[in-house]
Structures are given as structure tokens and as C-alpha cells.
Image (cartoon, rainbow, N blue to C red; front, side, top):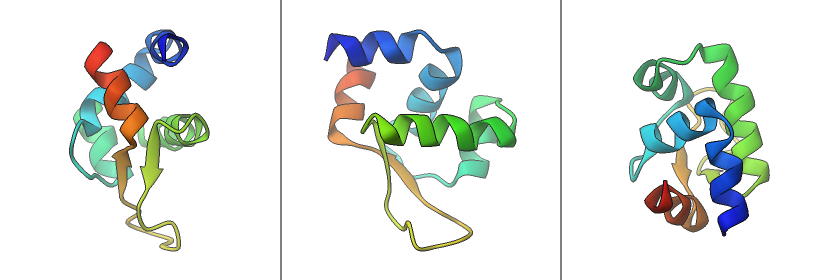
Length: 81
């Protein structure tokens, strides 16, 4: 668990995205505007966090309007930040 906390803390973008999503479900454009990160960076950050099982897409078949939330592990990491 500490490795994941360190992994998130090593990037201000990862940290901001986790804090922005929190316990909500959000689309990438909302995450971008709420975290003050450019939308083209959000896609990379979400993909990175998804590979590390910290976020999950709840409607992956959608081309537009994909919804993201923190996984259980992502919520645990967020509490430790």
C-alpha cells in the first residue's frame, strides 16, 4: 500500500486527479476542469492510474462520456495522502 501512496505522491497530476475524483463519479472533462489540468494530460493520468488499479471506468464501452471513479484501493490511497 505504501508503494502506491508513494507512486501517487511522486506526481502532482496523479495526486490532484485522485483528490478531484474523491468519492464521486466524473467524466474526464470535469476532472480536468476541477483539477486545473489540461484535458490532454488527464487521459494519460487516468490511463496510468487505471493500470495501477487506483481508478476504474464504469462504462468502458462508451466512446464519449466515460465515467471514472476511484477503486477501493484508490480510496484507501486517497485517505493516506
